Picture 1 (tube, rainbow, N blue to C red):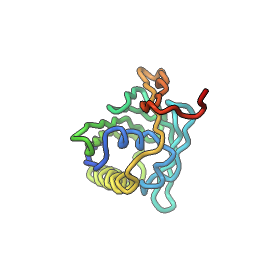
Picture 2: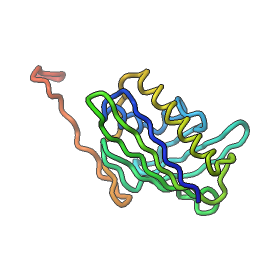
Picture 3: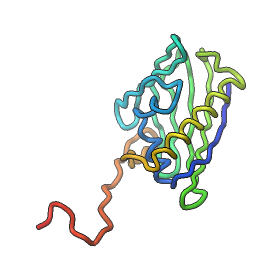
Picture 4: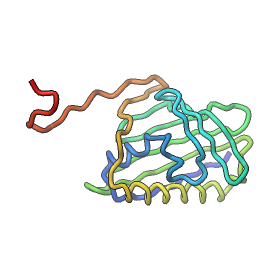
Length: 170
């Protein structure tokens, strides 16, 4: 088993960093090894990763997710690539956030991701995420629900804090 832990500090607030991370289908925009992500349910997604002509497809399940804090996942493939991991978010100030990724990888590890190579790839992808989110300055709508023990608990709707009436009025 290979354990990888990398972190990056991003110049955006905690909510923006978290919300962008939860938009899994957008990962191919900034992660060079992620080719496609399809969100099947709030807790299960199908990923295609690859370098050059090499590709690997797998399903991942989020087993725990708390908005603006963390998410834990596990791969569902028990034959090939086996992995589990976590992403933690920590506010460092009003407009700075630390993002820490920790992964345990075993089984048929694709693309030569063994030892230090996996750590370098994760570090590079986190730097790509930093450039992407800092360039945007804000995230679109992230998923604000909670998952505990693999059970989805949808987020509460958020209402405008403005005292000015919004559409529809009356």
